[in-house]
Amino acid sequence: MGGNKPERERCACPYCDAELEGGPMCTVCKVAVSYCPKCHKPVPCEGKVCPYCGTKLKEESPRKGG
Ligand SMILES: [Zn+2]
Ligand SMILES: [Zn+2]
Image (cartoon, rainbow, N blue to C red; front, side):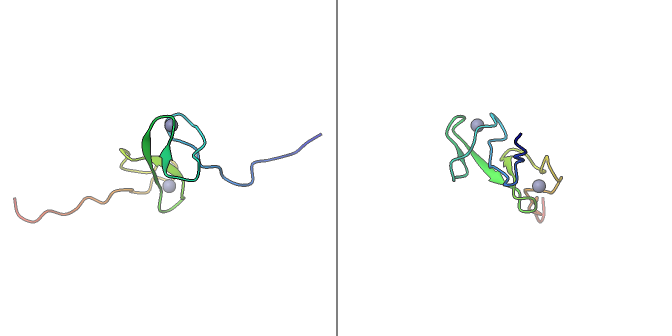
C-alpha cells in the first residue's frame, strides 16, 4: 500500500532531469535554466517556446528600420 502521488512539482533540469537545488542552475549540466512565466516549469534557455504549454518564452524585440 502506498498511494503517494507527486503533489508538488519538483523543479528538474530540462536536459538531464536532475533536480534543481533551489536555483535556476543545473549543477550537472552547468547550464542556466529558465522558468516558464506561465506554467512556471524549468525550460531550456535556448528554447523559444515552452515545451509544456507552448508559451513564448522570449519575445522577439521588434527592430525598427533595417
Ligand atoms: Zn541538467
Ligand atoms: Zn509553460
